[in-house]
Length: 463
Image (cartoon, rainbow, N blue to C red; front, side, top):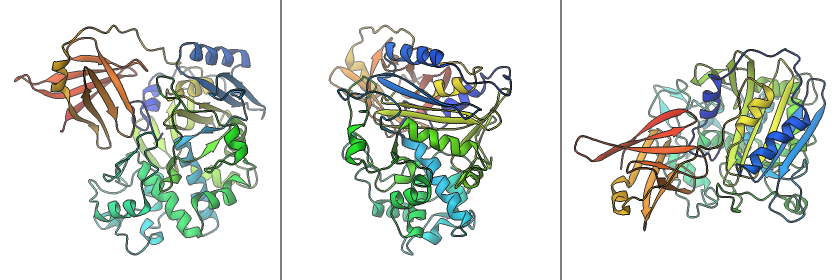
């Protein structure tokens, strides 16, 4: 979930929660390959993805892989061996590492993270309470989604130049806006810091300790941060919302938040281990991460250690999604039905709905973006909309004008052009997302309303 098309961390899950229907039989088998293939081919035909690979794990332990579309590399198929950036699904691996280190007696959930950082770092505290490893893992530390000194020089690879020292500087000067542990706020900074602290405790890099403790024991040879030559040859190239190839992302400082690359075959191994608490060598450690620990922004959503748990009439789905510049991914499973799904795409358009729908047919697939018609508006009027609009403490939309065009940029994401439907209503062509600008009684622009997934989210103009 590092990058999303104008959505916050759990928006999709929250929206879907209210749409869940009558529970299906406990032993329901996941849809047939032909059904899955039809969904994927339709998604490709609608240009809502470039390439997409789905892995399923049925209750009897059977794994299947279905794919459609293009990899972006000549001669490379979108299949179980194709490599994708998995983005914020990495956070669940950081949680797995945390659980393993807990099982070995190396760390405790209630340890302050400051215990594992250099003494020169002054971690923010509040009310006499320090931020613990649990607070970081449950997205309730009080830290922002991203640090205020995050200022990428290259938006095509925005995390690459953010340094450890910059993170330390931000933490040392930050004042928490609320008490620790009382409110869910999805934070790449928080889980990135968790991964960093665990690596420091181990005396190794994040990738090295994760490989040693989690990836190698599970036989996940194609899940790494650093691409070897073979993985690079099998890399499905990422694409933006317009279908253009974009650069891969590198996250040297916040690796624990979203730096991993993987394949469907490897992710099915991970899925199987998560669904069997008795499996060796990590079943028990992974099971600990699924335990619901705190609320997560919705009456139907809680969070374990990184994993979100969506509750509804059809049962509970443990899940996480991810996104980088040119990829959107999903992993989810039902612990009672013992079935799960992995969805990997090389497109910046989300496909979470496919994962949820395959696990529970009562959750509908999203419809393609509605048709919108651009109208001619005097571009001089666009200047009134220029500014920054805050929709949440860690999520804003920046509006700019370039010549005759109005552009929109969500926090941590690339720019998208806004096309006018009226003087105050705009749409983007990459997804079913619209904006309405709001004016006060004096005619000045005071805010906007984001329309997406059937929801209306207001934002106040702050700059």
